[in-house]
Image 1 (spheres, rainbow, N blue to C red):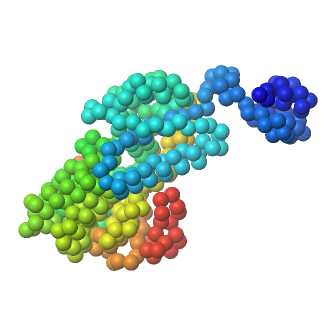
Image 2 (image 1 turned 135 degrees about the vertical axis):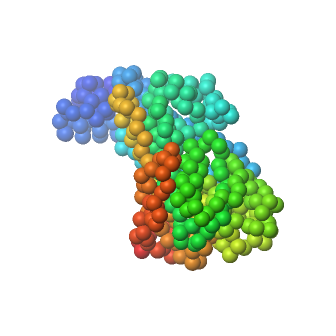
Image 3 (image 1 turned 90 degrees about the vertical axis):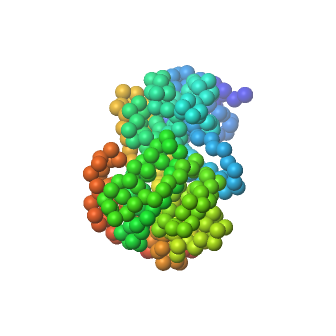
Length: 394
């Protein structure tokens, strides 16, 4: 096995100089640095990561804990698109820092308690942890953050124990409900909600009620809870038809795209025309949503940027553990397709700006724009944005 001594001997330098070159430190002349790198390449030398970690008291590894979901339909694999984009964002940031990533999938029980022994074992192998989707209870996040730097991706904006990077779910959800009411004249809404304790679902739920408070002529005629899966959305659609077949709602607002796809399947099976009889909208803008008939109106959240910003914050916290926890909310976009009643064949994108009120604020939203910047760009269907790509220019 090639050692640092072999590299030093071939390059004609000390082992300390080789170490400085390997770690990218200053105080090495450029000609010497080039000679050492040539020796490393010629000998095929691989630095001992464990030894480097001991010398710096750091492993240069972060962990990503992804939420594992039970699936009952092939399209649920589309949910992996979410973590695929998160991973791309994380990797894009750590690549420049020569850090590594350790990934695991994990479930939490009904009380938000994760597999504690497994999570503790992961904590011992990394310098910091990214927790995906905020599925771990706040009291456990607090205990974990006392031991190791933690950043929660898509966590609750009110989280106090750790940094949070999330999409602006509140403004995005309020914007899509406002679009149904203000642009399409919808008055009777039905809500297919997500899990009761999921941070994203909570923010989207509060935003729906916030938008309805500002439109007293509208009413919520009913709701159902799903688990962010296609099948749970399909069941919600079937239950809606059983209860309201004689007087359908004007629109169904779903907490994510997969449940909206389930509702579309239930309506198609019952010959309910969308959007002629009922409009349907979702959230997330996963790629399969654009392939359904009619294509689904949704809210796009910058998933790759979630991973990138969360990783950047985690590395900052590893470098300085005394930083105060912060919450960073990333902007969303309305993606208007035919399922809400917009013209078929064209995708319209509207950038959503922050409403400027939290879900705890009881004041109604202003009439009119309600946080939606009216400048839009129209994109032909064949060039609609794929996950992780920049939108095409109008």
